[in-house]
Image (tube, rainbow, N blue to C red; front, side, top):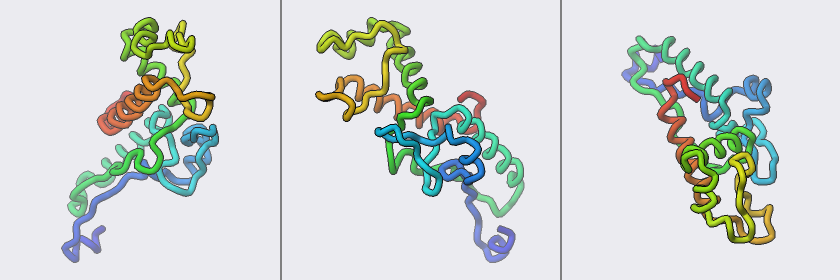
Length: 176
């Protein structure tokens, strides 16, 4: 960066949050995103870690803070990029962190009332009623002989959107 700065070229540093190093994903295979067929992603591409995984979020914050501390006074650094294409290649993730997060998101959205969720989703149709948020699973279009409940699919999309927005807003915070 010093050589570039000497030539009048400024630098934008990028954190490895979209492409964590292989040693990190090897130590934490539970961080990998899971596709609709329940197959975990493998290392070697980008955005292969689930951004809803609390461990991944904590490590991303740690790495971002360490880089910021190390380069905070470097005159060559004019900007930072943590990730500019969240969920651009694959939108969904079906890992356990997403399942837990989706249930928590639903409980908040429906005021901790499974009855409100049942009403909003019209679950009386086809006996889809839930007795508890722990019964709700991420909707997967291929797992049913008929289409999934469209309200469940819409709320899953809303959850994904809200969770990636929360990730972007929390890169400097302490909450997961």
